[in-house]
Image 1 (spheres, rainbow, N blue to C red):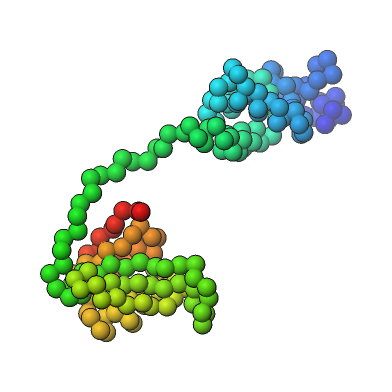
Image 2 (image 1 turned 120 degrees about the vertical axis):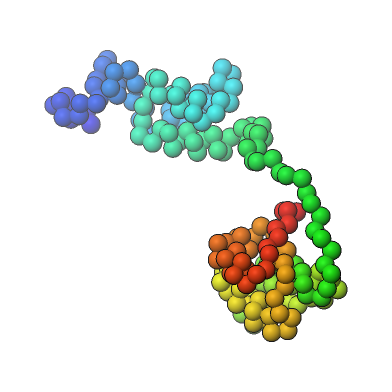
Length: 200
């Protein structure tokens, strides 16, 4: 790189007092331990106070340059234990919980969930559980943990519809199998309502 600079090939860098500078005022930091030291000093040093990713990047860029500086800072802040312990959750505030209406008849309202990470048996490693909310009758349908929304719909029709018809509503958790566009569109067309329970 130094030879290219001396020949004037790389216009972004210049040499001054044996140091390599990027553009006008950023000192080039080579690969190695020095980058780690700077990250530590500019993020968790006594004067830095565990500033966030953006502030750390801005502070470093004032005086230093190296390729992928932004990515290195993001990774460093993500793995900072103190930042992880002190960060505030930016989730939307949950709405008030509402009780589910009591079912008035058999198989009008069902709840569905998956039991996963089971020891493999005959090629299956999960169970789809469908419970009638009126009388608690339950169907256990063997499946795989990797089952898609389409296959879940097929399992329901194969094992449930032929015995009990379509329920008026289905209660499930926020599993992607139950929140996918396919799943919602399928039950909308069939005239059943999907009701999501809260996690945990």
